Length: 133
Image (cartoon, rainbow, N blue to C red; front, side, top):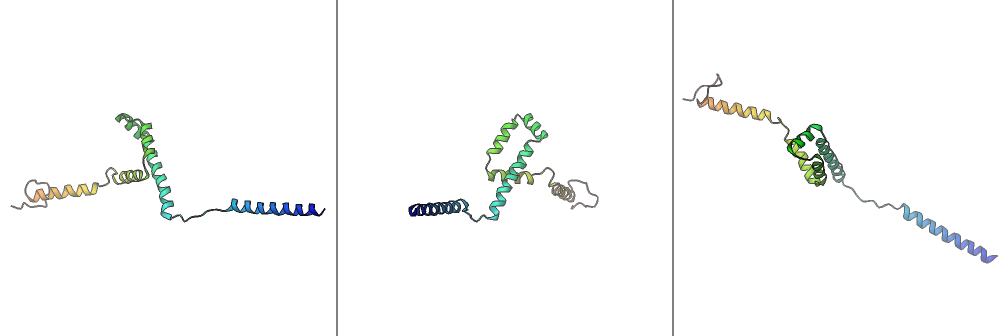
């Protein structure tokens, strides 16, 4: 009877120790610092890639690609193969090269050129200028 009591106690202790060890290792988590820039860049890259993919899937863009002889599926595959830096550079270029974005600068340049040519007596466009001769 005494041996049976020791055996039950020994088995209970071993099982308790095993249960404690198993629960401790299963619930341990490894944490590391994550910089804010890394988290933002990760999601920004996904957003940029989605922006380009949405632009490629527009009907007018696909019609223009087909007209130029480019397969839309191949263009999407090439977009998927671009690195994150290339996607970011492409989005920046698309946002900076918007059609008609610099129209004020162009109009001002044309005005100045015509004004100078009026002053030098090459043209007679503006009534408020006088010839330099």
